[in-house]
Image 1: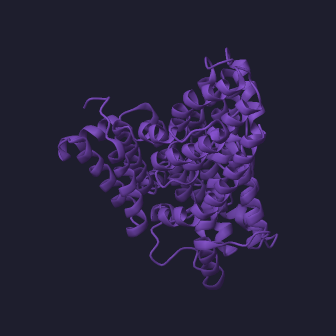
Image 2 (image 1 turned 120 degrees about the vertical axis):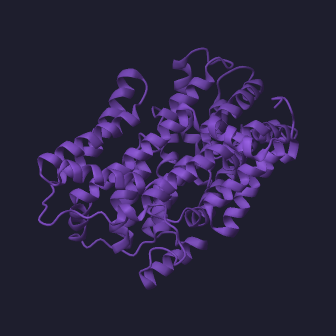
Image 3 (image 1 turned 90 degrees about the vertical axis):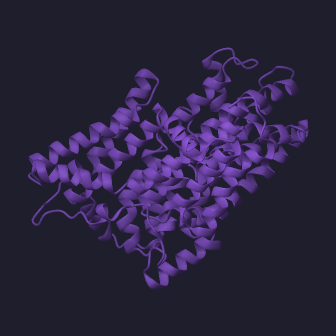
Amino acid sequence: MDPVTNFGILSLLPAFTALILAFITREAVFSLLIGVLVGILVTGQNILFGFTGLAQSALGNADFIWVLSIEVFVGIMIAFFQKSGAIDIFSKSIEKMNVKAKGAQVLAWLLGIFIFFSDYFSPLYVGTVMRNITDKARVSREKLAYICDSTSAPVCTIIPFSSWGVYVAGLLVGIGAFTDKNIAMNAIVRMVPFNFYGILSVIMVGIIAIGIIPDFGPMGKAEKRTRETGKVMNDNARPLLGKELSEIKPNEGIKPNLFLNFFAPALIIISITLGTYIINGSAKTLEGFVAAVAFQFITMLIQKIGTIPELVETAIAGIKGIVSAVIILALAYSLNAISKELGTADYVISIASSWMTPALLLVFTFLIGAFISFFTGTSWGTYAILTPIVVPLAFNLTGGNITTLVYATIAAVMGGGCFGDHCSPLSDTTILSSLAAGSDHIDHVKTQVPYALSVAGISAVLYLVIGIML
């Protein structure tokens, strides 16, 4: 296909189709698949050959294989947690504190903030650790998924030395006065106070968990259902967490060690991720998961929690348990690829640029970023598209100087891109949050969107005010 072909408004059709069907049918796999097929039809390709070709190009790359590998090892890790009885013993230790719904939510929120270094590990660990605790405290799976999701990507955007901050700093180098990475990294630090969406998303979780603001919308209904009936999911829910994982039980008489079987795997991931970032400037998250799983296997073998055949069988059950999430992730990647081929993001930029005025630079940067990221499911892709467009415009308005307007523009890019990564049904971290919390994916999206939109609305107003003042 000619890469310069302009499909105009038709470029939005695949994502719109998938989103509308997802909310109507509540079936993520079907909706994403239809969205992909619609995209292939729009390009004019043969459905059969177009689909197979797309699958190979979209999934046969290092990015997808990296995320897939993390999911596989997370599945094994969760299975080993179950087999060792580590999660049960942690839950029982928390139960002794007589934790109620509010306390369970606050604990999940704080744990999510603590795991600040990876938007992948954070929801997976928090969801896995807190699921039994929140179930017993009568907190809905939708609520747990929301807490996991809203303390992953948003937290990463407000931590300057996270992989997110480093990535955006790299995009800034060569634009205007950002002549080297040190100057760019300083800008990432200075933009944090203006990252209203990231900051407010994290705060929103806390005040909702504490009860300062009562649950509203679909989340309010989900919480009422769980509180009154004890049902943590809808009767028709299809949780991404496979039954293989929920059915894994420790052998009789097993006495797990809370440190070795519960805390140590997480500390290994944290140490490797942060250590490699500090030493090499690149966080090796996947390597951390591999090392943690290897540690679990060897430790459980020494503790005689299981034989080699038993542990291998447990690992396979863990992989089976995340198959649903893998299928959704693969289709989301395919939909993102066909949207890129159709020039979806370029079309959005082209129609929005005509609205742009200096006074509205910040609010439009944020809103356009939010729109692109929601319909493509990618934050980093949004950053790559918006940064070279809006940052030069900010420099234009400041006479080439690095001022508050430049910092605020970078923050608007960060926050807008985070919106989609945080709540789009096409986003990998949204999928991972549903997986770890054991929530129906569409239910998670439907209950979270009103909260995310509320924060986005407040953020847009703040950007408008700042833009007028500067």
